[in-house]
Image (cartoon, rainbow, N blue to C red):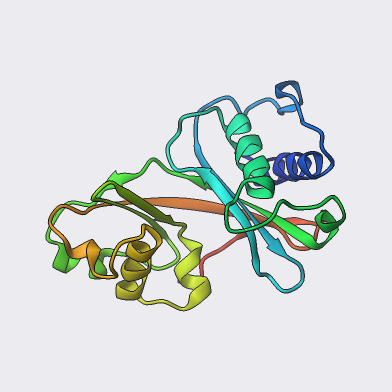
Length: 195
């Protein structure tokens, strides 16, 4: 998938949502029909603070539809934030992460930290009816090591920090390609991991 096309589509959806409009399926560029997991992240510019992040970890929708739905939700339905205003769209950047299909990590939990690559592996935890997800870029942005990443993943799911070690905890990993605007409505670049 062309990352610039994905980010431009997400941007159109964010701008439309903030203006009280919707974009139609007919506006989805060709080549975005196959299902993919995607996340759309909104950040304040130039500070780079999180402003919204919603997505689909599993490939349940065609790419274009998933990008639009994620962008609309990141702009208006992230429970951590108020909806993005039309004026505010000029001071946020849009980032799209395209995910591989999550796979369960097999093997002893004690070996898990040594198998995770910061900046490459996104993680999902499922345990006791709770679920949490962190994108591959998050631990890199926060400077976490593998054990802190797993602890923060557990906390994101509303679980104790050591929940990832529980025998009934399922940990999945996935990879993601990250594309972002350098400035609001500006050039789109692929974010390359520092690892």
